[in-house]
Every structure is written in C-alpha cells, then in structure tokens.
Image (cartoon, rainbow, N blue to C red; front, side, top):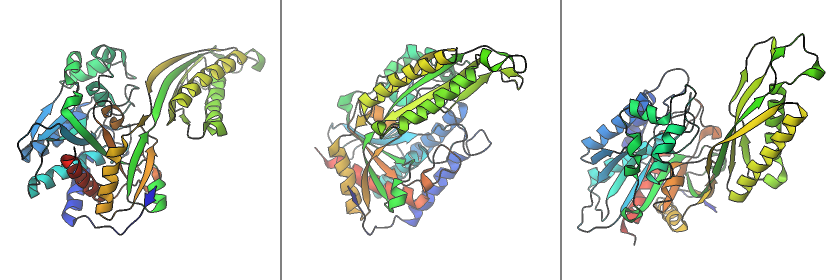
Length: 423
C-alpha cells in the first residue's frame, strides 16, 4: 500500500539542527573513508556521551545500563503511572560505513526531545530516548547486541564467547570501555514498563527513492542466519604440484560462494538474500596453493522457514563441493535471528501521522536487521523509513538529506503523540 500527498515542509531550524547533529557524530571516526566507529570501542562510547550531554542539557534524566545502552527519560506532565513510549537507534558503524545508518534515528530522537521540551507538549506517559550499543555485527559477528541484552536474548556468558578478529572477547571489549559484561542481565527491560517503541531509520534500499515517496511504514523485518566456514585443503608449491593432485581450499571456497549466489537467485527463493562478505586465504602467498580459507555467509529472509531451509541446503551443498575437491570444511553458526512481523496497530499510528502531515507513505518490509527486531520482544514496535540515495548503505556514499530526516522526524513526533494518548 502506498500513498503520496503534498507535504507540510519541516522547519528550517529543525533541518539545520539535524544537519549539525549528523556532522557532530560523523566527526567521531577512526579516520579513512566514511565513518568507522566499531561496537564497544572508545569512539562509540564518545558518541553515546555526546548524546547524553545533549539530553542532559534539555533536562532529561540520563542513565547508561550495564550493556552500554544510553537512555534519556522525559517524565510525563500529567499524574499517573502509565507505561512508557520510546524511540531511538544506534551509533556504532561498520568499517568505512556511512554517516546515517543508525545515526539518523538517534538525531531524530534528539530533535523530538528538543521540540517536546521547547513546545511543552503535554504527555501522559514517560518518553524515553534510547541509544543502543553495538548494533552492527561487523566486529563480533552478532548484530543488535545492546538490544538483544535488554530483550534477554544475549547472556553474560555469551559475551565471553563472541570474539573479534584480534581475539578480543566482547566481554573484554566492554570492560575496556567501562561497561559491566557480568551484570548485563540487570539491563533487561520489563514488558509492563513499556507501551510502544518507534525507530526511525534510513531505508538502506532504493524503493522509496525510486517511487518518490517520503516515508516508509515498516510491517516486517527480515531474519538473519550467519555462519562462518573454514575450508581445509593442502598448501603446496604452485609450480611443483600438478592440477590433478591439488587440494586447493580456495577452489572449494569459490565454488561455495557461487553456490550461494545461485541458490538465492533460484525462483523458489524469491526474497532470499545471501552474501559472502568476508573471505581470508591462507597462507596468502602468490606461489603457494591455498591450504585454508575462511569465509562468512549471511542469509536474510522475511520467511522464517525458508531462511532455515536455505541454511541447511547450503550446508549440504558445501559438503558435496568439498568432497569433490578432496577438501574438508567446518561450518559454525555465528548468529540466528528470526524475521519479525511488527504489530499492525503501531504501524497504523505511523501511517496516520504521515497522513496528518500530508506526507506520502509506503508500507514495506525491511531487508536489514534492526534493534526494533529485538525491542519488539518486549514492547510493541514500529519503524519509520526515510529514503536512501541510490539505495546505498554500509558504504561512505550512503546519503539521506537532512530535510528527508526532518520529514521523518515530524512523523516520528506525531506518531509518538498519538501513542501517548492511545490506550
């Protein structure tokens, strides 16, 4: 379902504040192309501190939990004990990522808080503005870590098992930035404390842009199954080893990669996306046949059964390929998250808010994972998408205008006002 209308334009001051916030966060990077601000790094904590300082200056109560999530609360203006509504996203990035993934949702939350305080908008419920820690899976292989912890999906024990490329465990990385991995169970949210949650995010696809539509109302979020594969062959001299006697681990890995692409393009897997995003060859010498190759596989789907069947099918295909190449392989699951259908009644408030503002909308699924996927385990959750130029994300070229984010922010504020008064 889609609808396009003549929109009320966001204020210039709001657009400028959003642009300034985007620039401030983009400056917190390891350098190089784009933005590099990895999960549980000092730069990620610096970004959280900037958010906390801005919210404290507005008079909000700001806390950081054991998992590293930062929560700013605006108390209700009316007497009562109603459960809260919330909004927010994340501030970490992939290596050499963009300026907007996650950050757009945080700056939208900041701008909503500013407008609510400035205009003294009456509230029956507490309003909470949340920055989740370690959403990206680029460092430890598992995504949505801070939100998984508030949902009880990741335990203290598991933080010792998740390890980055340097051998640093998530638990150690958390401690190095002043967090408490052994106490993350204390960060868990209680469903009774929450009425609803909304997350604004860039689309990370080109559907809205291609249709000239301002707002996406998300009805479902894809699941993700991730695993690592280690192929073992025999390293040997490239000149001295005849082709028929080789056990080339890279040849096996290459066949596995093309098998992933072929399976995802099969008509029976319409909607399935499979990506090999990392491949490491050992020993990595020009004159040595690869004896070991490690690679990752990321399966995305909105159909839970098909997602898991695809993972099983790939495991069987990989086994046959390895046998044919006289190699062996080991598959290890890195993470597995089911797709989520978001509550229709929350999505209806997003749609109504877009209508009230005269903004065109499209109901669509999210192909990417988000913190909302985990939050929905605790609180009914909705998502608002704003356009991504050319559909690019996780790259320096990622771009959404400040005006587009401001339009989404207006929808976010209006939807939160609707939720505040809902029963």
